[in-house]
Image 1: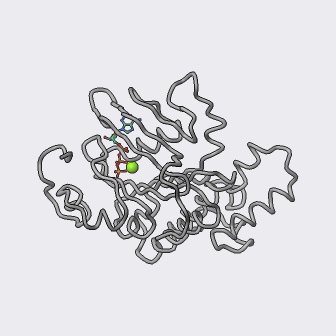
Image 2: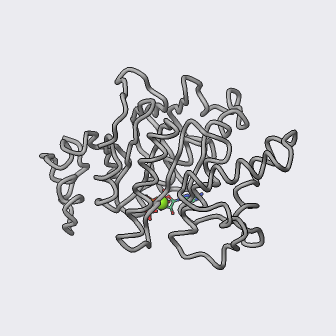
Length: 263
Ligand SMILES: Nc1ncnc2c1ncn2[C@@H]1O[C@H](COP(=O)(O)OP(=O)(O)OP(=O)(O)O)[C@@H](O)[C@H]1O
Ligand SMILES: [Mg+2]
C-alpha cells in the first residue's frame, strides 16, 4: 500500500446524491463518495455501470441531473458556479481511449496543454518540461521524437500519462489505465500510478475492472453497482468483504445475486 499520510477529514472530491440519466436510461441513481486528499481511490464495477460517467462528472465534462460534485471545497456541478478553466487546471485525465494526437510526436503531445495554458513560456522551458515529464514516466528525453503510430499500447498509455501531468495537476483521473495490456506492461503502469502519488502527491481516482491493478494501487476501493456505491473500504476490507455482490465481483464469478446490492 502507498506510503503517504492521508487525513480522513480532508476531502478533495465529494460526490453527494449524484443522479444521471441518458434518455430513459438511469445510470447513476444516488452516488455518494468522498475522495481524500492524497489518496488513490479505485472505482470498480460492471461494464456499462457508469464508472466513466462518474469520472466525467468529477472533471466537469458532464453535469448531474441531481446532487452535487465538489472539488477542493468548490461546487463544480452547477452551471453558475462552474469555472471550467480553474477545475481543469487542477486535474489531469488519462482517458479510456488513449487520446494522443496522431499527427504530433510524443514531445509535442506532452507539450500541447503547456503551450495552450502558458503561452509565456520559452521554447526551452517547454522542452525542459517535456524532458521532466518523460523522466517521471521513466523514458529518456530522445523518446520525444517518436510518433504515436510507432508506440505499443503500453507506451501510448505512458505518453498519455505524461500528457495528463503536463500542467502539474493536483488530481489525476485514470479511466481503465491497464485495460488491453499484458500483465507485465500493466504492472509498469501500476508502478507509475504509485509513483505519481508519491512523487507528485496527487489525489487519484482510478476506474478499472482489473482487480490485480486495483489491489496494487488502491488506498481504498469503492464498488459501483446498479447506480450506487455499495461498498467502500481498504484493500484488506474489500478482500474480506461480506457483501455478496462485492465478493462475487472481485472473485470474478458470474451471475451476481439479484437485488440492489445495498443491505
Ligand atoms: N454521453 C452519453 N450519452 C448517452 N449515454 C451515455 C453517455 N455516456 C454514457 N452513456 C451510457 O451510460 C452507461 C454507463 O456508461 P459508462 O461509460 O460510464 O460505463 P462504464 O462503467 O465506464 O463501462 P466500461 O467498464 O465498459 O467502460 C452506458 O450504458 C452508456 O451507454
Ligand atoms: Mg468506462
